[in-house]
Length: 385
Image (cartoon, rainbow, N blue to C red; front, side):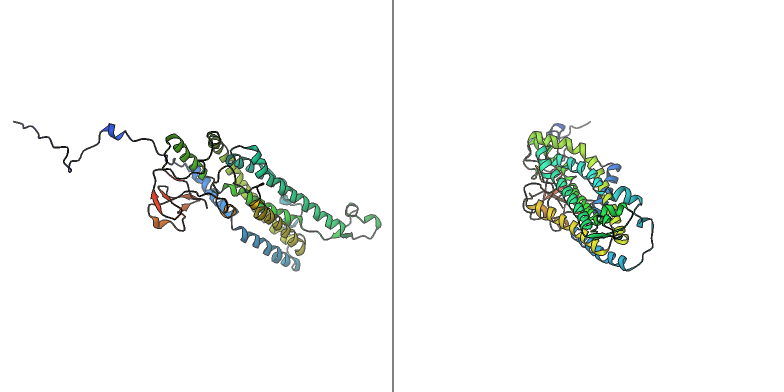
C-alpha cells in the first residue's frame, strides 16, 4: 500500500529547485561578446605585431642612430678602401627602380593609407580629410621638392668642371661633354631616405589601437540598442546616427586594405634604411651625407613635433571626430579611454593591462582612471598605448 508523499513547504530554505523556463528567459538584453578569431586573423595579427615593433621603434633612438651612423660609418668609409660590390654600382636594381623614385613610392602607399584611415575617424567629412590630413602629405612633398632643388643649386653654383674651358662653366655643359663636375653635392639620397622613413613612421601611427575601434563599435551598438547607461565611456558616444553608421561600414570595408598598406609601408621603410646604409658606405663624403640627413631630421621635427602638435590644421594622424589614440602627441586634448584587465587588480601595472600582440588578454573587468578594477557586463576595448 503506497502512502502519499507529503508536500514540502516552499518556504524551506534548504529546498533545492530549478527555476522555471519562463523565469530564466526573463533576462533583458544580450551583452556583446567577442567573436571567434580565425587562424587567418591570428596570422595577420602576428604580422602586424612584428611590423609595429619594427616601425614604431623609439623615434628618438632611431634619429640618434641615423645621425650617429651618418657620422661614424661615413667617416670610416671615407678613410678606408671598401671592396666594391653590386650595391656600390649606381645602376643596381634598388637604386634604379626604388631610390631614384623614392618619393613616388612613398606617395603611392601613403596617400591611399591616409585617405582610408582618415575617412574612418573623420566620419567621411571631406574638408577634414583634405585640410587636416592630406595636407600633411602635400607639405612633405613641398619640403622634398624644395630641398632637392636647393641641393642641385648649391652643387651647380659652387662647383667647377675638371676641364678649364669657358664653354664648360655650367654643370650641364660640363657633363654633356663627358667631363666631371666637382662641387659640394649635399646628399639628396640621405635626405630622401631618412625623411621618407620618418614620414612613413609618423603617418602609420594612425594604426595604433586601430583594432580598438571595432570594440568601440560593438559597445556602441549595444548601447544604442538597449540604452544601457552602465556601459563605460565610449569615444563614439558623441557621434550622430549617420556618422556612427558610416564608421561601422567604412571600418569593416577598409581595414583589410589598411593592414595591407601598413605591412607594405613597413617593408618600404626597411628598404630605405638598407639603402641608406649603402649610401653611407659607397656614395658621397661624410659632410655631404651628414648635412643631408640633418636637414631631413630638421624638416621632420619642425612639422611632426612642433607644427602639427600646436596647429589647428593640419593635425596629427588619428585626430578626427573621435579619439581612439592617446599618447604624448595628444596629451593636451586626449579623452579618457576605458581599459581592461584580468580579475585581480594586482595584474594592473601603472594602469595598463597584460596584452598579447597588442590585444588585451582579459576583457571581463573595467579599470578606472585610478587603477581600481570593477565588474562590468560587457567587453571593454583595450586602453590606448
